[in-house]
Amino acid sequence: MKNAQVVNGHRVASDSIAQLNDNEIFVFGSNVQGMHGGGAAWYAHKNFGAEWGVGEGLTGRTYALPTMEGKASLAHAVKNFISCARKHTELTFLVTAVGCGIAGYSPSEVAPLFKEAEALNNVFLPQVFIDELFK
Image (cartoon, rainbow, N blue to C red; front, side, top):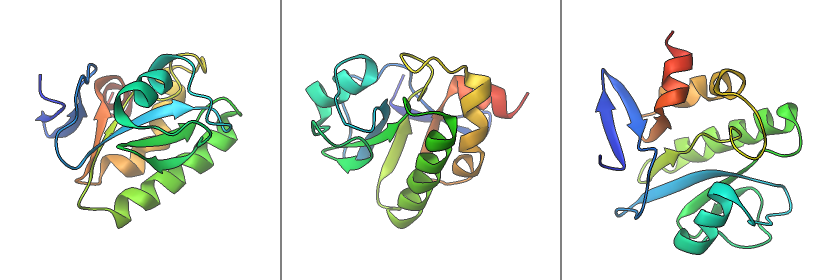
């Protein structure tokens, strides 16, 4: 599977991203301190230039979303992400199942936060979020 494709009219990010194409941004869950020690955060740091110490925003070829500080904090960070995606239409944002790993949220808790992002042409969501948004 490519990193991003349209499936049944929805923009879907691959569950397995080994390398990024030009202008693609790997969107992952982090902690506010930017200590990328595990999961997708570690992978983003090791492979795509996520900077140690940056827990939210664009760094390297990544976008960090803090997920460990509570759902309200995550919701605010997702709003910031959506604003960034709107400003950077030249970039393609590949969202992982943010918050559904180490942070311990379920897709049904996190997917609604990305409802507004689903309408953006440059944002691709994981299939598990699409499934929740369009039950």
